[in-house]
Image (tube, rainbow over all chains, first blue to last red; front, side, top):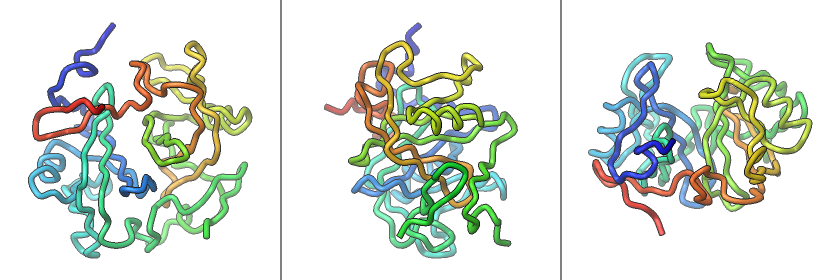
Length: 119
Length: 119
């Protein structure tokens, strides 16, 4: 069964039961910076402003990345996947993308049941 | 509040209510190939075999990527994010990662309300 979402050239995000779609952020060089979620409002704000907005599940509100830290993510390109349930935000980060101060949230490698902090 | 998941070097995935964690797959060059989900069994199978396994939400079962197509994803490196609710699978794909035959599921750019197929 072919889903029209896969072939048509119309943006039609497949939001989950909570109204969210996964948003994966990389920089232009392909480093994975963070994974978050957008609702329709966050996607519209991202498109209108050119800066990444998300929906915070813990705070249950719209959230502009960098709104307090200043580490905004300027959107270079936005892509969507085959079944339109995930967005790829290619971004130019103004500073560390992770709230821990690391450039990327993915600062640890998984080795069996242990994690190894990357240099 | 510092979550111990952010600082400790112990793998402790924060599965959601459905027992799943988001898994983002890129190739070694940083191209985003696909986004899927793993449960504990899929993560264990991925670590044991060195090939990416996921949990299919539509079929509600463990699924080895490429089990029918042959387009397996050999795991080069596995990373986890700050709060341990997302995995980054850096993989060497044996063929197109998308079921549509595209190398990546992200074959369309979002332009306003339209999608543009990438060359």
